[in-house]
Length: 119
Image (cartoon, rainbow, N blue to C red; front, side, top):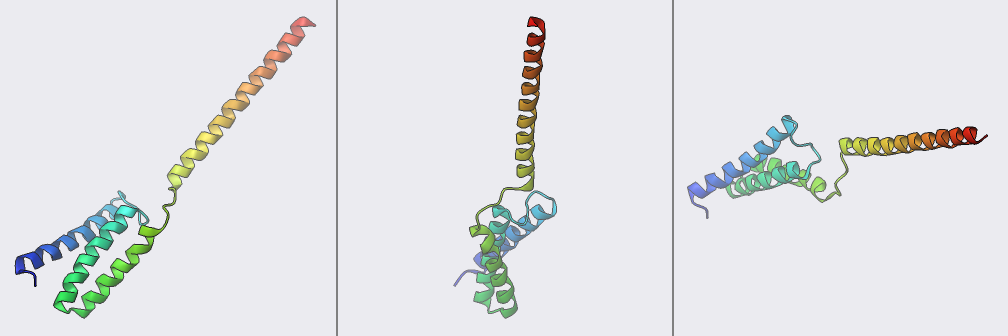
């Protein structure tokens, strides 16, 4: 069995990990789908669930096991590109197309101008 100090260190570590994830989410540093957010929740709640199991606290066992289990799907799911990334990529493609169109238009004017000069 764990010493009282080790028991408290594990419990506090789990709580701190869950709270770091929650604080980062609230401040906009992490998103709900981010792997770090879900990893913090999973590890923190797994530690708390372990302590709850050792202490036979059924309400906390249910809460922490459910919290850990709900953190697993986003961890194993293939990460989606963020909308900001997709927006940036779309803007880059649009700028490239726009640059190409301007270049083609300049070329057309140059060819027409040369043709007029020859005629």
